[in-house]
Amino acid sequence: MTNLQQVFSNGKAFIPFITAGDPSLEITEQLVIEMAEAGADLVELGIPFSDPIAEGPVIQEADDRALAAGTTTDKIFAMVKRIRQTCDVPIAFMTYINPVFTYGAERFMKNCREAGVQALIVPDLPFEEKEELLPFCLQYGVTFISMIAPTSNDRIRMIANEAEGFIYCVSSMGVTGVRREIGNDVEKMIKIVKEVKDIPCAIGFGISSPEQAEKMAQFSDGVIVGSAIVRIIGQYGSDCVPHVREYVQSMVAAIR
Image (tube, rainbow, N blue to C red; front, side, top):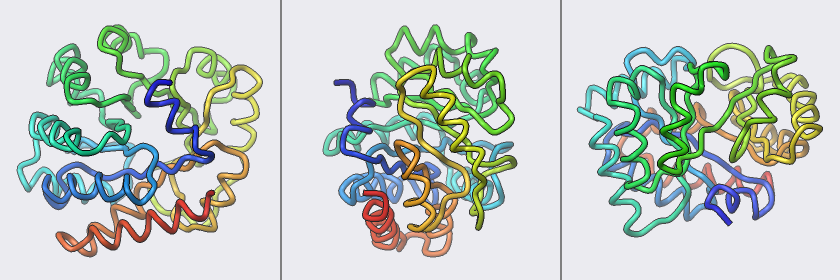
């Protein structure tokens, strides 16, 4: 069983997102370990970027804080290696195409493998252009995670057919952020995916409360929560770890 298969093997998966380096890499390291202990099945680490077009203000501000604190991609790789000494929770990087190209795509994937990063999510790389990264992902055993959104329409079957690991289902249009209402488009999208391929589908963008998570978990294989956690980190800064742990425990309890 690969690490990504084990993510969905305990029932519904809970996948928290945090921005690496916000408020510091030391705190990020503690957060990953504590969230794993609290029941997170996969941790999504955002690589801070100055122009994160898919993100709403909460995560944009986290990116700004992380960059201001001196966070770099190399320091993030070093931090993941430290985490790996004590914690084997699967980790996915969420980043944009520009930082990967600037760093060097092959070097980036090689370092992912060496640090123990299992997967990569790149919101601004269209499915049709994934060949720009896929050969390097395959070479170094990093799973490239495909995303689908309510606008994917006819492309959903095509994307599902080629997807690996799991599919990141974007619940609603627009940028990341906490939403009160999540439309039912996502349930239709997952039905289409499952007709094509038996691959886990996790829903992200907008989920913040245990009630929403429980509702989304009824027809998906897992939920991804970012802005709600990043907001707690922004609120408590260096004292955020116990608050985030408590939040993750409440979300895990809701979906299982």
